[in-house]
Image 1 (cartoon, rainbow, N blue to C red):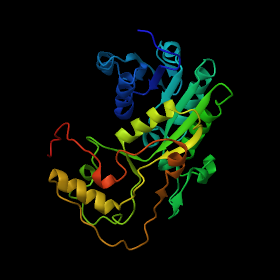
Image 2 (image 1 turned 120 degrees about the vertical axis):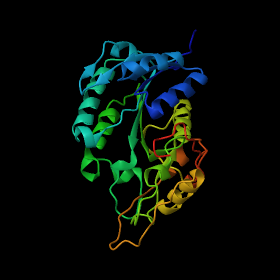
Image 3 (image 1 turned 90 degrees about the horizontal axis):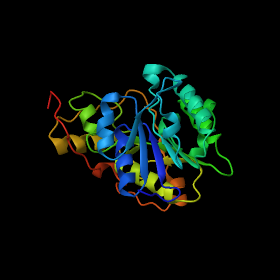
Image 4 (image 1 turned 60 degrees about the horizontal axis):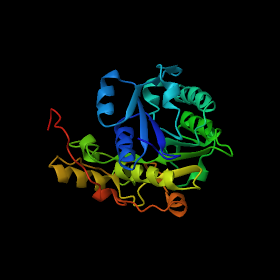
Length: 288
């Protein structure tokens, strides 16, 4: 099957987001390669039509197929930092090794999936310009990783960093994680969520766009309170709603703006309001 120039893509990290993104890109006519760290997931990815490889960054490259994986026009990097398990230095080291490999390729476009966890909670609206260096960040290692990718930009290579809000949708249901909890003190804080379908739609729009280099927040434009979101999703699935109390001290928050993305990219959110996100229970947990 012949593919036009610009139509070969690798998704490095075919997890909850990456796998669904790869499926969408296949439908859009791209030749899609992808990586997983789990040999058990390889057959499933291949059955979808993804040219899949087992490859990992531990933090150095492991696996025999990195050269094939990076022999594409576009690379989308979607590797969870896992700071709580691996520490703050591990993910930047992963990106150091990946950047060194990418520098030796003819890849012309890189999209790095980051997170709004880079923003400190300063009780105000946060924009991309608020965190440019690791010292400004609540997650310094993640900003180091972002900047390692941004340093790859050149006259012939475009790099976009997408700082995603809390990824929700389908079986990631906010109420599932707090049902039945008592006396929560964070109910009044705004959420910074985004539906998985919107992340995929934004990446698709970025691939068609000629200009958005740099850093962009990807967050649903509406920011209801956690209490509203938790109660709404618990009610939808018949779960016991958490209870809330007035906090004894002022809880810190951030409200992440995606206005820059909206002004630079021709994209309309499918789910602008976290109160109306689409969810599905794919499986029943033991306590359902």
